[in-house]
Length: 568
Image (cartoon, rainbow, N blue to C red):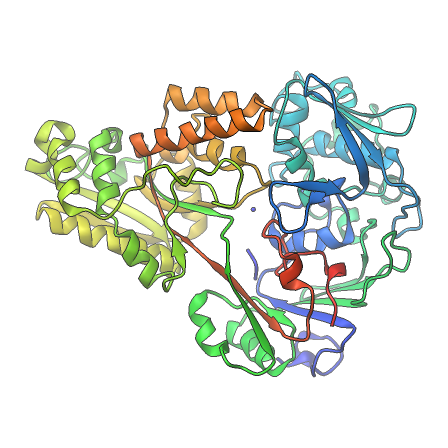
């Protein structure tokens, strides 16, 4: 979980001028793949979807660890922690005019469990409700009856979820925009799944990215789709919105690939906000009349330099031995090597050069604003003497004597990743003339594919949250069945046990203590180099109100809140 002029050149049919007071105009570089919640798993799509549709629950104000009802007004959790019952909001209408009922919510979640394509984020819903992240194509044990029992409406019109085991992250998962409630009658009328057992097999694993519902959405949100083409999405306020008509009447997303064009439009008042690019661009925007800069926004991603303990591609190994001409496939399985690399990275220099002083060292691969983060866990520092000490112990002393050649990769075009790797290369090669680090820039798609199969010795990569829960980060990075395990091949039975226990522990204090242990264990084993997190910023027209008061980093859109909370 990607934020991203001549009007005539974009085919808008009007000349750009100062944006009207009833309109919000945002320019970005990324295209918008889908408007179907069931396929939404990127922020460009999510920015639109979260304003056309609504979820059962949402994040409370600026908090990422508290929730409040949206289409649900209240909910209860039974004593086992496995049955969630939601009372739904009454008097709500979809853009089609259809009334919102429990049947729409039931259909939505069943549709997501049935389709659950690799392009979507429905795997973590399935994990909670079915006990597996797979769909019925990949796991034959999944039946329609099992899906139907997992989510159903009771006789009083309440929505009931029945989980196979407790999941303390379940509410956070329901706040994900991909779990927004769709209009059942409207969707079926468009030719989407009819919601029956008779046809469900035909829809298993189906990619909904370009579905009919994506082209003609109908949600309960404050905005409805007015127009969409290759370069523009236009939303208009929904008069029948249950929360009252929003003050911003029109929202326009324009896709403008050139950063310079976007920046110029922002400076001239031809856009309320734009995808600015990295922090150095602030030099062009500070002091510009009419612009407001909101800085020091907490970073809700985590980035690490991976040290793959089981390198699968022999091309990266050269000689494949500790003979000064390459490395063995299990080079990073030696804890002393990993610790030496951790002590060789200059964290403060990275903060200064890449983050321009606006960054923090984290104790674990979890945003510091998230529940479970422990600031007391120790961190590594740049210490050449300690690095030498560990390098001399590594591989029984042979590493220091013979040296090595390591091929490290980073995404081509990423200045931050390149600089991080250059810092590491410089510092390691200074320690011993027999140490060589070769840097290879590769296209992102190639690098993802290679690293997914464990082929790459070293890669720098981050993780953006699907939902605001420590499990989404810590299980991903540290568990032997986590999403990133094939890239790191790090396994530790103690870590697995802690993370598995945290997944089923509903007591917040006990769960927090478990995640603290995960942090200390990660420091002890040094599976990654934790890259400092940069603080974020946004720049927008000062006439726009409601951004700072409502900003929550878990929203997909640039403004960090529902568009209905904004005004001019």
